[in-house]
Image (tube, rainbow, N blue to C red; front, side, top):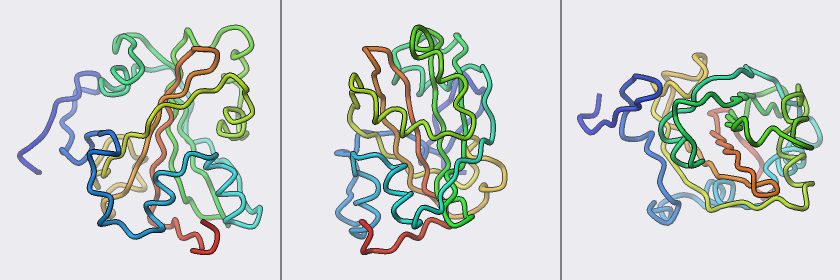
Length: 195
């Protein structure tokens, strides 16, 4: 393991430095090929782009949805207590029956009030479509990370593979925050002409 690690107080595990989320301006993204950079930094709906890239052969597969404590990094990004449980939804965004993106959403309890209570019951509906249809939605700047092979944030079946690119951003719906993390999996292979 890389000697440079940080302690995640909420998950009580060490993580490699590669899992540190940083503002995208802190990465040397010029070394990335154009396709990767386009997908990482595009501010439009990832769901809509995946639907287009897969010729409508898109679906959401729920991995888990439960109340648990966010990681320290997630809590800091949302400006909430790391000791308070949040609704954490993990899904695979499937394109052409392949898992292209692993998405992890952290929704504080205070966000799930009023008309946003329905976010608890999305099931196989994509959160992205809901977010981008809300006229009050505000998105903050992207944070980018290289996700380590052994990262606890990944489902077990995706650990032990190559380093993966991930991005996350904080959203606000009528001023209520939630955090969406999207990790591009090894099977992510959209055509260049669909950027």
